[in-house]
Image 1 (cartoon, rainbow, N blue to C red):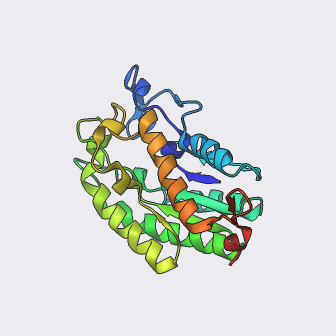
Image 2 (image 1 turned 90 degrees about the vertical axis):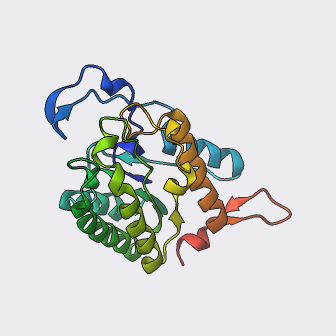
Length: 230
């Protein structure tokens, strides 16, 4: 399961710049347009299925538009999904919405976000579910959404890296993979474009292969279940 906000959902950050109207989402309301088939969970599932041909890879996209990691309701939503015991691995990327505010960002949103993410990891661990924790992509200050959080992204990601170390979970460093390439973001400065989503998928794929893959000489590569439940 891929769990996160509208970046996980695969929202198109180009189309919503047209026809914005006053609303509840950071002061504006935009049509929810998703890049169907280009979302990072969809691309990742395709990549994994092509490599692990003897296994059935099933992926749920649990992205929720406008969600903040620090919201108690987000922990409830996460717990509900995890408690179904359907998932062996959860890909967790949250926090971009927590740092919006003013010009450049809101660092006060980081502590509650990290605290709740720690709780989510604990919930998953208690259910024997493996978590891959991701940093969030950069934001572009030239975009009307990116301008509200771009300065705080490095601080958030520094705390996410520390969280991964302290909780002993694999870190998927999406921010580092972008390598400052803002052309991988949409016009709003927040959401990746199709190429950006593909990069996120490939970054998760690299981490999954490094952590879970087993490749006996007599078989095709496969994902080893014993790693999921150690």
